[in-house]
Amino acid sequence: MGSYGLTLPLSGLQLNEQRDVIASLPGLGYTDVWSAEVGGTDAFTPLALASTWAPALRLGTAIVPAFTRGAPTIAQSAAALADAAPGRFLLGIGSSSDVIVQRWNDIPFVKPYERVRDVVRFVREALTGAKITHEYETFRVDGFRLLHVPKVQPKIVVAALRPGMLRLAGREADGAILNWLAADDVRKVVPYVHAGGPGKEVVARIFVAPTADQMVARQVGRTAIAGYMTVPVYRAFHEWLGRTELLGPMWKAWAAGDRKAAVASIPEEVVDALIVHGSPDEIRAHIQRYVDNGVTTPVIGLLPVGGDAREIVRSLAPTAS
Image (cartoon, rainbow, N blue to C red):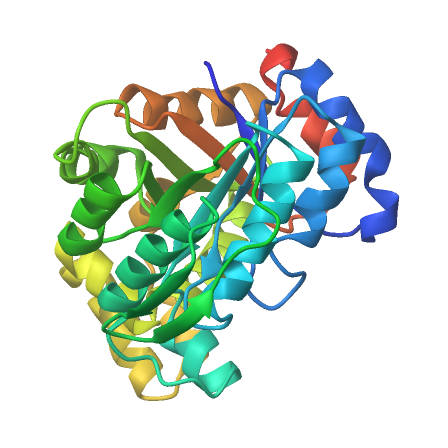
């Protein structure tokens, strides 16, 4: 396996308690750390810390929402990290979801495809130091110039689920970030990215329940799946992937307000496809299937099943096999 990433920050540890484990990652065979931005830390702070704690690691945002910051602010943050870690930073941009953008941040979630496209175009140009006055379809910029231009331009990757955004990721960015899909789904998804040209990065966030206790793994997995697959963008994604019949009972129960029934209705075959669990060797073998099907950078996202985060990270490392 080539690239092998881990999602930061690790749960169960404060940011200031994660230095030792992050510093150990390159020696364990990890090549990347990628941040998540949902309701915990922001996307940039954990990577800024990792850039000094483990200078060999690549750093990626998965993702910075295109709606919740102004485009110039995204460019400034990206420039700062690209300057702190020359050649090692990848800016992941995505639409996020109506829950995060509209319900949590009170920002209209309209034209997500167009917003991501416009932010990618703006940030790409802004990072060169060009002065930009332009009316994009979803926002306007009047006279912005980035005053601190990184010597090495960072790659930009786009979070994508369905064909339109996947094509955008391949056409106007350096690749795609995939999320909440099974290893076998990768074969359906990646051709849309590669239609934009050769050499595209394909990052996949892979949710891992690091336990051999199937009952625990499936319960944690069902809860996580219900939390995501009932969000409209993820529901549409899995309908496109062909899981309408399998997930239909969950969507029906959720719409009726019966959360317990919704979680219980998720079939084992869906949990076992979307949640990687088992022994460390079984987990590594499952992650390898994603790589074999076209993922260039698998990124582990640890689900909470108990245990010490430091030991779990060591046990799942490539060098532990």
